[in-house]
Length: 296
Ligand SMILES: [Zn+2]
Image (cartoon, rainbow, N blue to C red; front, side, top):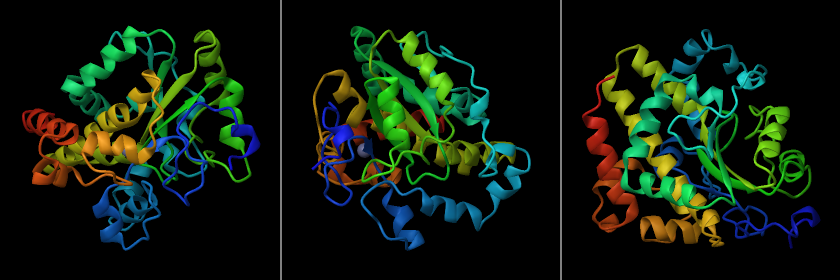
């Protein structure tokens, strides 16, 4: 049974978390993270494990001295530039906090060049019913990437701050300035907006590696996050654009060829024969090639 405020939503209704019909966004997790850390896998992309990993080897702490928003209590969300149009996609908006990371332009560049990335852009442009917004998920969030569609600003507010047995997006969305989101909904003329989130911790980590000329490490994050973007677009967001209501697992079945609660690692996706011929592996191959040729 869905909480009452969610009765009329038109989004994903299946859940990988607790079996309740209350999570209607897409997300995925990397298996190695939960395995390595020993954190229990609750069936979603638990970024907490990454944070734990970040905090012990220390780059984020060091990095945090340069980037005040790394303090859990200070955020960059109060100064977004609105509707930055990075790719001539009028329908897509990028949040300033994403483009403040040097990593993001590399990651997004690679993602946009993939077959599925191009396909997503075409599908997005071909319709005029839904807008897309890319945003930074708080590093306090459990999610590495996520997709959720809001029908209106009120819908956004209700779900962001809903305190009951609901989606609990407050942490995920804490970098978002509600006034700016309201502005965006006003500009979208009543259209619903698909939010595609990327955990800013990944971007910060890649920036750290870039800064320290750790190219191999930077490329590993680059590949991983580029794939995350395509995954979120192709396994989840595009279904909204096409008006299909797929559960998280159904989206994954489409993308990975198997119904799984969260993602394999990039290298598993790239190398494992069981993903042969799937959207996931094709994308991983394209990303791998592109990133291997990238000079930072
Ligand atoms: Zn997913």
